[in-house]
Amino acid sequence: MTELRRADVAIVGAGPAGMAAAVRLAEAGLRPVVFDLNATPGGQVYRQLGDPQVDAVVMGEDYLRGRTLVETFTRADIDYRPLSRVWWLGRESTGYALGVITQQGAQSWHVDRLILASGAMERGWPFSGWQLPGVMTAGAAQILLKQGALVPCTSAVLAGSGPLLYLLAWQYLRAGQPPALVLDLAPESGYRALLRQPLNAWRGRGYLLKGLRMVAALRRAGIPVLQGVDGLQAEGENAVERVRYRHRGSWKTLPASLLLTHFGVVPEPQLARSLNLPHGWETGQQSFL
Image (cartoon, rainbow, N blue to C red; front, side):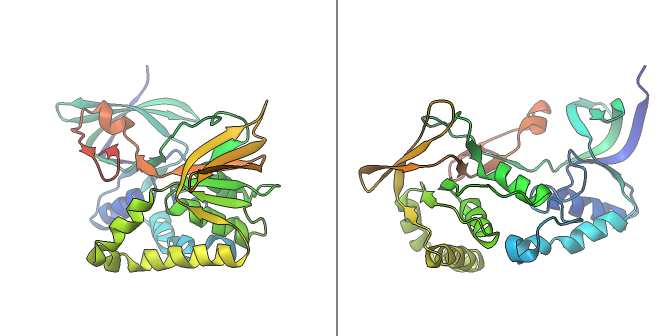
């Protein structure tokens, strides 16, 4: 029979939010248990930051900015449990029941309070050829970069929308393996809408400037950055061999063996759904929150 373990507070996830919550609780005199899928704290944003595999020249200063949080989390009196998957949650009259899978086997927990900090996941978006070998998400490619200092052996085509698309292209450029092409599939109406909200644009000016600098660096390096793309296909027999895209009403084809796509991120919903927490559709983000 599996031993029932107990804790006052459990946190699921050791990304920026989970680490910050755990540190606050430790400062208040509590000792939270933190379950984390990864082997080291940091989540996706600060993945492998405790032992960086790639230097700041490639990753950028924003990545290293989380070092203080990671170090504070590591020093605090926190019951950190890496390589632990919370696969089941249930409400009880006095708290919550958790089913946890670890390298040592299955565990059952009862906790009085629960904080879900399981982060986000990349939005899947099907298109013709999206399941061919050689088509990956940009998030998966960045995991390989952060965790193993791995960059493609060929110039990739990056396609999709969102900041990660340009960040990864810029990082590959800094790593000495610039992409062959960047295809921005965000509707141009979205950029025009930004201009109609000058106050919000001003509040986010830091991020806007960073993005503009990255795009400028890519173009200075001779990397084509095409905005207003509204069609994407991957073609090939047993793996991707060509990328077709529609730009300004005209279809074009580029030979390629690696296509990295990104269509934004959405909240990871599984554990919250299992507790029947209310979810509402957010039109702006095109996801349930």
